[in-house]
Image (cartoon, rainbow over all chains, first blue to last red; front, side):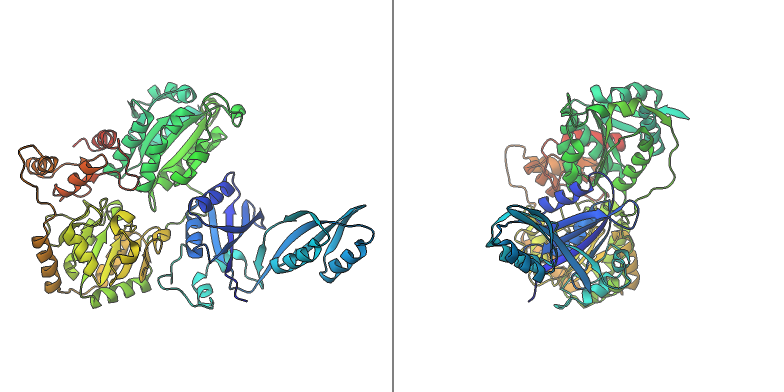
Length: 192
Length: 429
């Protein structure tokens, strides 16, 4: 299945207003965000944004270049075609009666998800995995009645020793691994 | 040495070489106005409306190449700057806008004359700051001037709460900046330059299209060398006017919606476009899919995001136009393209777009051409927006570098008069 979704990792200075700058940029350029997740990193004063954009609706190359124009953005890497671990976490509050509870628990077990709260008429399920896995579990649980759903959006990391800062320094190599090959006019553009 | 925030602002402006501030006072910036008389080297020019201050600072910046400074109070004072800041942003002009803000305890409380000007100006500034502490002021001002004037220039806004102007702290102007996310690429990639040289050598009908980037980087001599060495017609955008002498045999006017027919014909027939410091604006290209359909494109620009944004590019080169052209000219062998130049020249003879019709009345076009004759072109022309702007672009022979100042990107009417005053202050002649 060829997904058109791209995973971008942006390392940004942890200053007030940076998220607003990035959000404002996406809004005014008409870029569509599938998900964005922000948090601290191993580096002091540096935050990490994992941004998922769909190539079908948004020019991914422009996203990276426009992100670089935000002064606080230190590095942007498109890690879509790298060897990565990508995860999302979801909390699903599902209706549960004494008769349906055990069936729900069975499904949750199959997905290696966890029950993190039990109430007389509901369960909270915590699941981590890629979007497809979460979608599948959600669809299965929907029959029981969903009371609430919260998803974090994707976070991702390259496998092996290379960190995001290192990965960002070799954008040309990353481009050559792109299955469709470099698009015309894109080669060797880099702000690094 | 202990100083108030207001004194620190003035000291820092002096350190940055500022000579003039275009401003309008108000409650939140009064502490700064109180400190100004201690700094007679900072000339304050009182405007009648903040928008004029921003345009004047813009005109000053475009005429001198140095940052222009404007000053306004919080709330309505700040919002009145917005049109001027956006004008500077669209045309990459280094304007520093200093605004007063309500005192820190009142921020976020919808206080009197409070407005979130840093929020408002995110999309129309290169960067902006809300200063929370007088100790940050010197560093912020140094960064602001560096950001405004380096790389692709642009406006930077500094919002300073009233009580920060009054707060006392030690003043020391920093020597170093910490901007880990800001490293403009100046030198072009050697492989790309090699590819560009090859394309130019192979081209039969190349044209150079120049924008304001050539003027900003001061690549006048390098552009002339490229055009003459490879015998390539030079066509400019509106804001590119003044980067190449228009009386030069290789100068073929302005392209686009209001450009010359022969310039557009040359671009349409070209097999290679060498785009220098320009961004393929829709006024220049019209329908992108039909723009120069037979042409390959070399795009040289300091802003990587401009490359591939509007048109497909064959050889992108990110870098300062001047530095890139220096490297490119070195590798380029002299070439002759007599037939191509003759062809474009023939189009110019057949379609002289700048002919002025006969009339009993005094036509503005005629006035422009007479001003050109009377002054010998040794002036800076500043325009408003509309037909007057196009006549000024078409009926004046711009031979002097950087001699046309005009609001291109935003097309701001009301720009002309204050920008002309700013330009005059910067270049008293």
